[in-house]
Image (cartoon, rainbow, N blue to C red):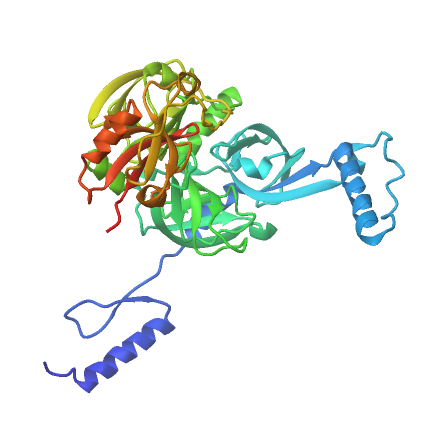
Length: 485
């Protein structure tokens, strides 16, 4: 291969230097001897169009007298314990009526954006959480006291209202058209520095962080105070609400998350209509399916939501859903991961019937469930203790010693199948099994007794990975027991 002539190299270096001085991005095209310049995007027009609709939100939370008294009592106790003397003299007005203006205040700051000309403003729920006063300031320095219309903690979306007409408001974009790598900007009030603009690209879409909604991930600089501000595309349309950052220091570290605007608007519409959001639930605890488990149970690929718990008396319980089921479809819509199930069910109106496709011990089943309204769930978790009347334990296999469940244990657990682990050693212990676990199935075969368990396991190939469906307290999961090599 011939070396590139020095004159061409000098020409390339000169072009690169000139491009850097002119502030252009250079694109090297194969087969050319020089770089072609391409200008970076200009955000000025976007900011001029969208900026007036972005607002600064300040909140005031007054600390109640009882909270103030608790703090003073704790301070007194601290000084007595560590310094052997009383602390600062308590407020002489303690126990007396006090004006609200005299109460200690906690202040917060965030961002928001006007979504209609009559003064509805969208922000994050955590920005206005606990606030006694919400003050909205526009870019032209007009200040309004806002009324909270509603806030939804599950999605972190809130709507407040200011009195006005003909107010500047944002346009909404189509999140479906948003592409990874696309330029976006954020406008907000980081560290109370209002009207601050930052730019970056979309890093990922539908990022599942365990929340109810999938997030848009960006590398736009977002800091405390940016919360509730808009994420804007190059067409000047709002595509998301800046809501979270990934941080180990409390400041920006290159990863930010925004709530997709289509999801946020559905929540906002419900808040404006009802003051709250009504969601569906079926009463299951779920998790993702790993590749190893999917292959071991015959599911093929890691898809669906693995049911770990079924709440007694819940819609799922009445429909026949069992712990260990893999829910693969809802009303014909495929469930790729557990978060998909949460989002689909929550979007179904309570009282509506929905069809569930579940994968259970090697076969698919169709179930019908009547969706209930989502509410706070508190389920007691109890460990099944050994019973002195239990049947004698069988000899250890795979490092496991198991025993039949007593009638009392079956009644308490509401189980017709399963054996109790009396001890776990070797391969079973390495897999995470322990005393008190209930083994429900081995390689998709239900286990009814310790004798059956021993006979089944003894026939398995010694080098074979064994898949066990195990219940621990109220949760059901799959455990892969791998024999030592």
